Image 1 (cartoon, rainbow, N blue to C red):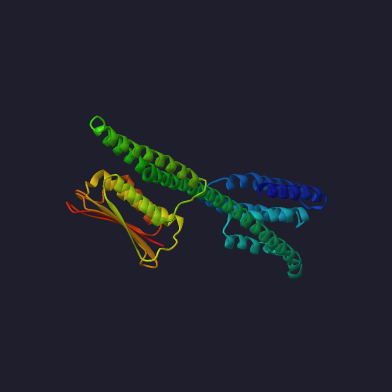
Image 2: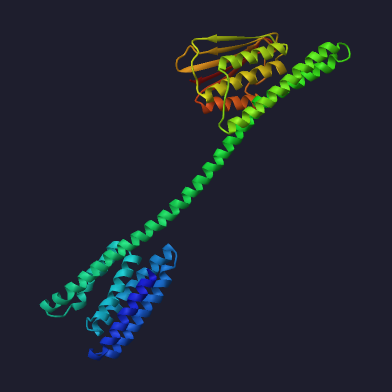
Length: 369
């Protein structure tokens, strides 16, 4: 825009120079035109580069001065083409620097440059000047709005890039949390059982070799299952997921817990129905983590898993034991149960833990499904 106005001012002044031979006051017109052109190019560029507050103050002083110069140039140039082009620079800069009502006032005052002429001559010269000024003001305003729209679009694009980066970072964090839950709930579960089996085998290694061999065989089986769990997680990352129906996987968990020394029963209420992979994953992990905690901490004589399909809109899973219960605040549950809570909440469900010291603990998860 600055370059376009500079070209317009230069063109107007050069045209004015060509018109000097026919003017009554050629020297005055040339000098005033040069002063006007310098002010219109250099002063405007300086004002346009200022901050908003200083720009308003400078514009309020600059436009009246340029208006007076335009009047003098227009009179000395005898309303020729060159003087008219220079006046259009005033109009355009008024739109760019002033509020629209003030710029409109500048346009309305321009026909008064012909004040003092006979009425017919004044109208004949003033109306074309007014029409050209209105056209220039409208075009300048459209260009100003287009420039502002481009600036707003650039800002919006930059914000969109920032939001996209934030969304990508959030997705990365969520994926890390999911992987952490899978590692803890899957691989951690099997390694816990392996550790317990090896510990039991070492305790009876010298006294009962056959029993220690059987315990080590179970530990080996758990290690094999741990490896399978790792492969399952990798397959899940590649979006290749295959698993037995949920009741069968829960039956395997119950049998595994029973083999580890805590007799565990499985009860299924209601009619079994298909669930989404995410819901089945959450329920399976809840049972797995719950039974792992029973073996590690509860000192329970027995445990039970209940899968309840009775409600047509939700599915519930409970893991119960008759062990020592949870001491203190049951909300301080560690990373494993925190991961289960996150799974349930993400699916729009909930996870509750109730415990009575000396009478056992119940872990309940309820999710839509």
